[in-house]
Figure 1: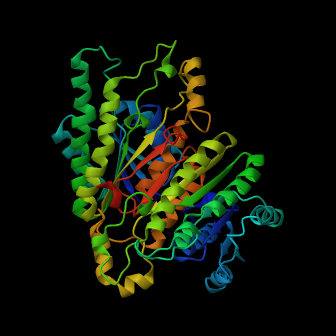
Figure 2: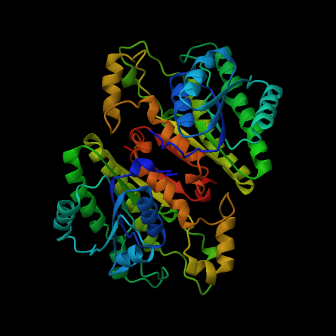
Figure 3: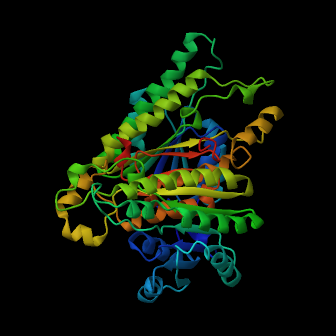
Length: 257
Length: 259
């Protein structure tokens, strides 16, 4: 049974589509019958397509930071693969992961640069406008809503870094602004705002940290990447046709208390 | 519109099914494959709706309850468990609107709390406990964007429409009680969330033209919601597509509260 049958035949772009969260989304879209353009860093998207034997997904390398080339890249992708119905944008500049005392101004500035996200959204929405519909889902984080609790990051762990949280908070406002601006054109913008979704590597090496994370949620457990799929697909489809400018928090209740 | 099989195999009880939104929710939930029990004070008001859904191949039962009476709620819970073996989710969409304006008698305020505060809590506790006992379940409350923002008098100018004060009180309370209940039931695997619709266009009894025109300007999508657009969010939150979402308020308001 295809739970998300309305996605059959739709074209969806996923940036960061081969990462821990992104790959679950890419695979689910492919299984639902969507044509997926999966963008990631050098070779990763193509490797995912190969390894998971995805039938409708095209894996592409994506130089996200070349903002001058981005609009032309968007147009070229549309010319080749058609105008997408939706975008799930997970890619961001990765943080240096340093302590507050140690991060350099240059490192801070680099993470805070949301220009590629803005340029991508503007270029794509500009094209979706011609059709009068589209759904764009950005990815924030619970650490764009609340600060990390330093007590659960025991040495030698570094607390979730300040540049990451500040950039994720900025994504929330970017989504709201874009939702308001492009609403009259029928384009919806929303955020998925994940809570604790540590990747399998962290799960394996930091069992005590995982148990501390779990205690901070109402459901008393961390999330798995399969659980980010439903919220993303919901926002991409007409199930959410009147939902725009929203941050859909998927955190097991972390921020509810 | 919601996906057609998200609630496949789920037993859902919906409270409040006769109004504009209630009827649309019945169509969404039943259309998503749920085994749906609609519970209402007045069974006969729902028989026609249920019959038409059933003739379309959906599974809809009608039952009676007085949510102001805890014994009646427990009896309903026991009947549903006896008949269907379990409850996987509930939708609390019941509302009473005895109050119309600021200077109404306090008796109207009290009557409002009887259903909208006490009845609401009693319902959620009765069914929340039952789902907690089996270790899983999903509760969805229907609040309103008027549980988050105040009323804009400009919308109502020159019309006979009013925004009743009790509504803003109990919908606001409903949203934060959702978070309390999410904490309370979370360890037992029961998720609790709330959907907050914006104003819904009534095609059978359209709102005043001036109101419609002004309201459209206050949403980012330039219109009121259609009743059928709320069900997608409710079905999603009831389903296994949202297993890590709890304590969340999901507005379906066309961006009214995002601006």
